[in-house]
Amino acid sequence: MYGNIIDIKRFTVHDGYGIRSTLFVKGCGLRCAWCHNPEGIEDSIGLWHLDRQCIRCGACLAACPEKALSSDAEGEPFIVIDRMRCTKCGRCVEACPTTAMSFDGQRLSGEEVAATLLRDGAFYGESGGGVTVSGGDPLVQHAFVLEILERCKAAGAHTAVETCLQGAWELVEAFLPLVDLFIVDLKLADDRLHREYTGRGNALIHENYARLAPLVRDLLTRIPLIPRITATEENLRALASFVREHNPGARVELINFNPLAENKYLLMNRDRDFFRNMVPLSAEELAELYAILEAEGLFAVREHRL
Image (tube, rainbow, N blue to C red; front, side):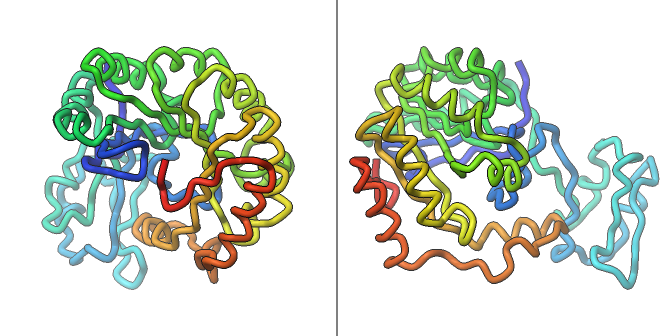
């Protein structure tokens, strides 16, 4: 089976126990306004023009057989892509001398991906590590991901998936025999706000979490801290109460806002107004939010320690 991936990163340490290899698959059921991997929202492979790397040589214009590229000498970006005409043949990517034209992923077989993930098996054994599938979200290309996990489990690797649980319960259930560690992201407790900032309500996510928690031995809950949106006392108290109800004593990790994601939006020529004036939370602010978790009897995971 073939699927579309963003990347495979080897020697990661933030996506589960020990030293790991992390697969980032394309496609997500949510459309979070703050998404830190915007290239992974769609499950199809997209064409980028990275204006900062463009030397305005025009090689891509000459290479495109569909005339899907045009130039604007006074504009930013210099190259404009007509996505209705573009067939993603890749000739502009091949012609570009600076990688200003590039694809945001690649299509690989499950066998190829599993072989790459298992390449560092010796390090997994020594460090207690393994392989992690993130995204995007593994539930979108579930059949492709399940094949990869099956191959990794057969090789004796510890497996983890990071998911927002936006999918039918039958999909989540299919992962149970093949996953050692579930890393579940929860964003907002309020359904209206969840719909406003992620494009979907949270009822399905919360239902799946409530069903998943008692069935798995290893579950880490993560909450991304987006200033003024998710990183509020009201939201943390509501989420902590929800987690405690369905997963008493759960391990919960707060993921501080990372301003580096804004660079991806710049490279993709996408609007960055959402990130304007956003900065990571201070140590004092983090401590206050972690105190909320601990007051609910939850185990606060700090500094990406599992």
